[in-house]
Length: 257
Image (cartoon, rainbow, N blue to C red):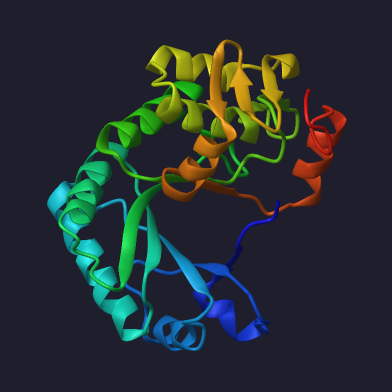
């Protein structure tokens, strides 16, 4: 259930690797010399690299230049075959640049694939994108055929109200359901929005054969394939809270719900 450990590159010196240790590393867009030195000691463990581009980097050609610079810096660290995920202020130009980068094989031996990272929350209201905005980004990534991963704000399975922040929060089941079904069932933007808004647990069904939301169904084998290639993961600073949320809804430990 638990995926890769996510570690800032500057904190890797505090990590003691073990056999089979896998991690995703957060780097600055310029990948500093210190970060390169830290990465070079974990070349066998780093499977994914994540970064946020500056807000001034907003056009496809600028983003393409940044991707090539990142490739050069990761090459200097000795990384090979890593997935790279970039977070930007605007998804459309990023998706265009990423799709072109991937289709041309510009990552060479260093970067196997580039995807888009969507931030879904934070500690302030403005950090939470609306379901309509999330649906738009999922649709953009689907349209360009690029992977997507999600981060922040998803401690609970379903769309819910946070009294601490005073805003509706995204549910990780909603987010992942929408991301999987947009590929597996070709959901429309309106259907994606509806899925992201859904607060009713009985609308989501899990079996050993697959998953369904209302009348949309996707097989377990297709989910496995998409988890490797398109709808990758979501990051959370808590493991216990999401699992407890699943248990309370009757999802965790059950073959059906």
